[in-house]
Length: 295
Ligand code: NDP
Image (cartoon, rainbow, N blue to C red; front, side):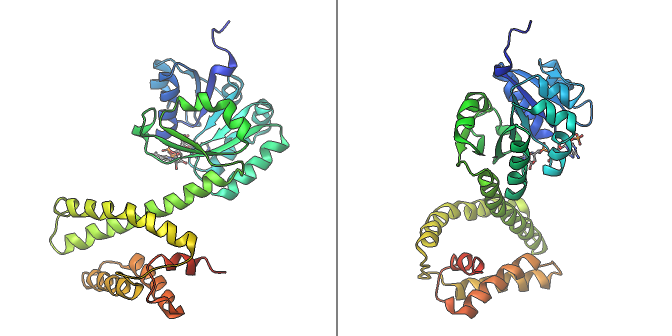
């Protein structure tokens, strides 16, 4: 007989870079960890470290009361969870889906789970794989509070900070989308900046210290913007949209003079010009969020 109970066991479905990191952290915490991946052979290193490699999803699911799913998107997690035999094996167990997708897909999965007597939590991971199992990891969760509390100690084995954002199941995915919106727009800006800098004979290494400086001015701007957004007033004192838009136009002109696509900045400039057109030229940049949100 196993020395572990199903209650101190966890199953990880999906062994991409993130799934492998999650399973590794559970193993490091001493939990009985069962793993499965669609493409076989991704579990070798984990099995060497003590994981149980399941031959089927049913077998993986049956090994633990808590099932953590982490695959590319919810089409993939549906393909894993929704075949009849798997759904039957999941009944009465808890699924924590740490796969990234839209709030709508999280809500749809919760509905499916409820129909089949599967207990369901949704979540998202906000930090890269090397953080998992360390204090730097950031996880967000949503779904029934009691269910979250029941599994909290096992989830804590993943390290870092875990925040339960509320019972509404789509909330973690909604935060994830908003935060990834910041991340990918910033990364698109950075990639574009490197291209423009290179065209002007500036290496990425030369730009880096100044680029980091731009990153560092953002946190207090986010704080101020949050207050303005929630208050609904947008002070342009010191930097009105009319001034921002002229700086954006310089970026578009310089890029296009080098034959570099300026689509992202043109889109941003367009939003700023629409806000000016609606009479908000003297306001601060965050006014754009309010204008975009109008129905
Ligand atoms: P991927 O997003 O590339 O996901 C790979 C996993 O998805 C593999 O296990 C793969 O299986 C599986 N998969 C893909 N399609 C299917 C399918 N149709 N059926 C079954 N399984 C499928 O890699 P990650 O592990 O990095 O990411 C997993 C999740 O974690 C994503 O939602 C991602 O956004 C999120 N995340 C990742 C971070 C990171 O730093 N990597 C950071 C924060 C969040 P197979 O091996 O068979 O192809």
